[in-house]
Length: 154
Image (tube, rainbow, N blue to C red; front, side, top):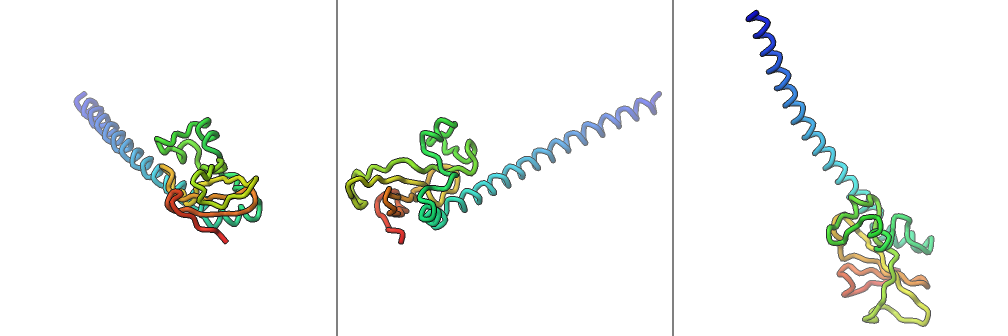
C-alpha cells in the first residue's frame, strides 16, 4: 500500500513538474515565434515601401502598388493612427493614395494637376515622415522630413 501511495505521489509530482516545464517552453516558443513574425512583417513592408521600388512602380504603371490603401479605407478596416497598429490590423499594407492639397504651394502648380501622397520606407508602427508626392501628370517628389522640403525624383 505504501509503495502504491509513494508511486502515486511521485507520478503526480512528475506530471505537475513536466506540465509546468512544458508551459514555460510553450510561452517562450510562442514569444520567439511572435517576435520572428513581427521582424518578418517589418522586413516585408520595408521592402514593399522602399522609395525606389515605389517610384519605379509608379513610373511603370501610373498608379501605386496594390499594397497601398487610403487612410479612410484603413480606418474602416480597423487601423488607428493613434495606436500605430497598421501592421497588426492590415499586414503588408501601407497608407497611400490620398489627395495632397499642396496648400503651401511648395510643389509645382498647374491647372488641372492633382497631387497625391504615399508613405515610403515604412517600418510598421506609427507612420514615419517619408512620403512620395505624385501628380496626376507624372511628377514624383520625395520628402524625408514630413513636407518641409521636397526632392524631384528623376
